Image (cartoon, rainbow, N blue to C red):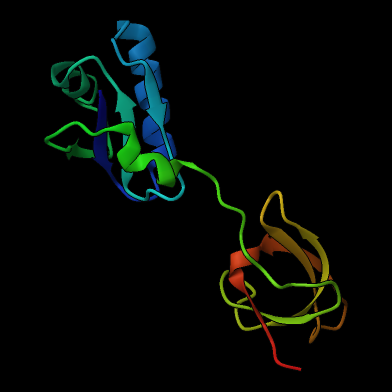
Length: 144
């Protein structure tokens, strides 16, 4: 049975590591832990029953609770499948960075890595052009 834990947003990986260590030490019946970047604030576990799922989260920081009912794999299947980012970026295009430390900066696309959903750009309005690798979803194509 699958159970979802509510956790502090952004701490999903840390909580998964803490739970993994606790499961190893206690030989708990938890079979799997799932952290999905598309499921912010939640962690999913596969446990034999609700009691076992609740027992493992006792005294674990950043865990807010457990959802009352178990869920079926079909309910979360689409959140677990990786979908490639749809992008119309091409090399030498002018873009604007929409997030991060370079937010608002204009840049030129140098390289696109679709497997990692990353784009390498060179900042345009700087004295020395420095290549910067950022996520594809943090750029906006500028009109020509």
